[in-house]
Length: 251
Image (cartoon, rainbow, N blue to C red; front, side):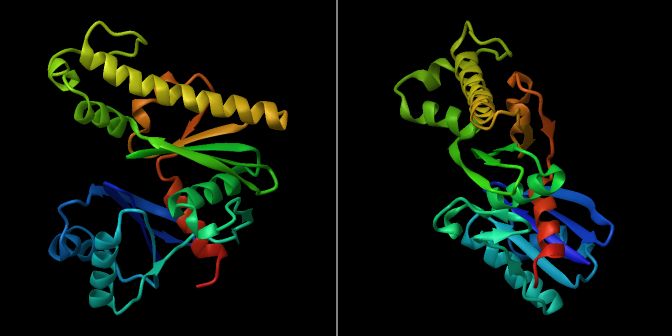
């Protein structure tokens, strides 16, 4: 049995995997976690695993908190997965493989192993990332932009009076709003959804085939209703990649 952790910028997801695949999955915000909270929320409820795999883009503090807690409880050193030149049938496009965020790398691995076809992978959280992988397992590179909440907060913090004007109002799915709050939130969501559709179109033109589109991440619901291209929502894509890593890559 393997215990898997996907640490994002604001949330952490975890699950147990065995020969049948991923088990029940859990998620929580980790900003206020200390050693006691980690033990109470996760360790006290988990059986002793044979291995622990961690994907961490949430920073050193939360990574060290998990490492110390796991070692103290079970005398296990968790394995912090890192992006590599190749793994699980996928080849990394980055000249310096470790510079690719490990969450993106694991998402690409999971996407490729799901169908082995041209795929566009979109992760929507604090940031929004878009990556491509072709039918041979070649990672095509990707892009990173602020996620919907970060895009909104940057406007509220860095403009003179938009925040005041946005204190009241309402939001909808329409492109144009009749109030400042709606204009900000609708503008962010439509911009991100349009970038997803633009990426799918670019991949289609370059490769001569429509890519599959996978959406993951805690903020995906903010834009998915605005995306025109057909897509599949896969909330646990990074955990799926971790599960594959545990099965296909040596300890």
